[in-house]
Amino acid sequence: MAAAAAMTYKAENLGEVLRGDRIVNTPFQVSMNVEKKCEVLCNFPNKPVTLTVEQSKLIAERIREDYYVHLIADNLPVATRLEFYSNREEEEKKKEKDVQFEHGYRLGFMDGNKFYLHNHLSFILYYHREDVEESQEHTYRVVRFEVIPQSIKLEDLKADEKSMCTLPEATGSAPQEIDPTKENQLLFTYSVHWEESDIKWASRWDTYLTMSDVQIHWFSIINSVVVVFFLSGILSMIIIRTLRKDIANYNKEDDIEDTMEESGWKLVHGDVFRPPQYPMILSSLLGSGIQLFCMILIVIFVAMLGMLSPSSRGALMTTACFLFMFMGVFGGFFAGRLYRTLKGHRWKKGAFCTATLYPGVVFGICFVLNCFIWGKHSSGAVPFPTMVALLCMWFGISLPLVYLGYYFGFRKQPYDNPVRTNQIPRQIPEQRWYMNKFVGILMAGILPFGAMFIELFFIFSAIWENQFYYLFGFLFLVFIILVVSCSQISIVMVYFQLCAEDYRWWWRTFLVSGGSAFYVLIYAVFYFVNKLDIVEFIPSLLYFGYTALMVLSFWLLTGTIGFYAAYMFVRKIYAAVKID
Image 1: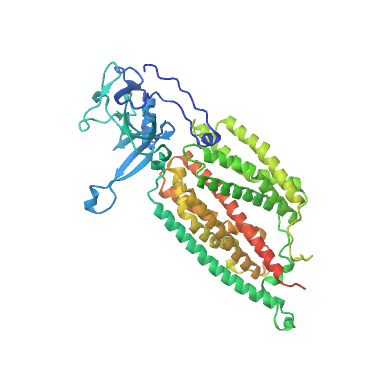
Image 2: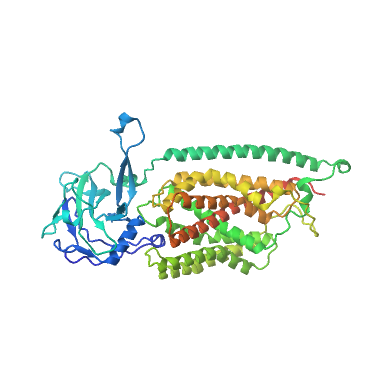
């Protein structure tokens, strides 16, 4: 015990490195089913650890910033049990305590302006005895790992030569204070307690994943479904009735021309498929959107089937990275076909743009943020070799696949547009104020955002407040609801736009369908102000940097869904009218 064990880092997968997990061994000695009353960690028992002024200052600062310590035993993360009385009836209060688990344990606590360090850890390990035949030995499995951190003053911990120690009585002990202005002496101690448990090995993760609020999710989903059905009802009523009427009117062949002036969306039939400005950038963004869509769909589906369990740390992140690379084929294919439809010719440049535009922005933002983390000497920084590996994956896997998809998409028949485009563009009449792009974004974003806003809260707390997120079944439902509501909204918006005789719908649909991303941004700011107490500059920068990435990806995703829905709709309605 005298010399602390040498530190060795565990080899990690891509997801763990990107998440900032660095796993290292500790000098705690724990053996299966061996109790330890109290033992001194590191150093000789009669020679306490001395913290220099600098170390004391650092520890006090970390305690003030609410740092947590995470330990892993047998691949189970440590948890602190929080018991609080639920607000039930007074009589029941004595019986029922609500138990929740907090991930890791707090480094210390503050009382007034004094800092106290948790220097004694009581580990409680629960084991399950496997049923075996009589002749064989029992096999034990660790099924839960809890810790009760305590702060005990050096004078109260009586340690002897064999690095054993005795804990003081609970009532009379004073906590171990850390004074940031001078050197501090203290002992680090720990005890181990084993308890038998009925929890099976297979369900040992349940305590970490039990969410106390599944009702909220069901409530939010039912709420969203009702909203979506309501929307679909209104939509189909308006659009089918009005469209039927429109089409019937347009297709009457008597001399109606003299009596009624043509109006509405039929007027713009000669311009509705006129290619927009910057067709290459539009098709590139839509290609990235398709890539994201396929990746998110597969990841959520696989996670819903329980294949990305939280016990394999970083699996989700690794899967997402690789899937995004491989989905480049689909992204390229759709982008290439659309670019061809929009009368584009330079397919090589278009493919390069698709493969580098969105990933380049993501990589750029991440690199800048990483430089700031490096500057802080944090273990959360992605090491340089990993960055190089990601670049190699991007240019070695993703880029060729996008080119492959783009080539086939560009060679395929372009989408057939049912009406010919006139030589001369027609004039666009003066638009009403509510046809403004920004008003459209605000109107179109509300419904999809409302459908997923509760799930968003849970995802945010999983990312920023170190909770587990494991409700992928709900997430899958929410994702489907999101797709449906985005498509419906964008169809309504494009119908109103064409009725106002404004045929420049390509870019506009893409922007407006992504309107819910704007609300996600506002929500992220609200979450930052209300839920997180971040005061330093760099953590705030990180928060907003990563939020910007999320909002951008979300905008691409919803914009793409809306764009394709609107494009199909426009092709359908113009195919239904007879045009002289």
